[in-house]
Length: 229
Image (cartoon, rainbow, N blue to C red; front, side, top):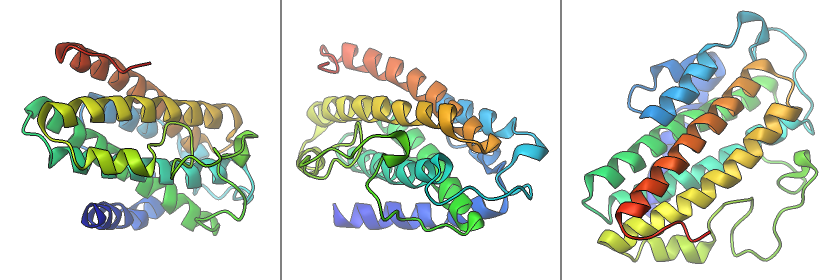
């Protein structure tokens, strides 16, 4: 579990510099599936005048733009870790492909978000609680679940202990909840953020993750179950 976190973190950290250099980097996410391509296309549509580094005044440290970048980077990191875990726990091609797509897409997006914070000269960690930019407080006593949809420490540990169909079902349920929380956050950025390219990325996340939720519901149905909601 610790090794998975280190590998996923290293991969995502390597993308931070790329995010600070260009905001069309999502166009190069050729390893992602339909969900990743939808998010990439949304970012690629950003005009030259509304990019995060277009010479406009950087957002404030307590702005929605900065808050979303910080919090979604953390949210995405867990999705990457979950996806690496399940790829080691099942041989099912369909689940492994989905997990790969999610891991690659969200690692790339995380690199962009952290790159923007670098470009804006803002800290990657806020002194305040997560979700404050949305007027929300972080869940209290949730065993590691810092934001909506995030799995608890106990759930992450259990995922790493399951195999085969059990691991597949548990992952699909966890990721469905994770995506729902991510959509809520991304919709908050669409409504509150002011940096054009960031708003476009957020809308791309909404579209892609809604599509993946539908896909995961079908995958759970094939396995004779549902997301449990």
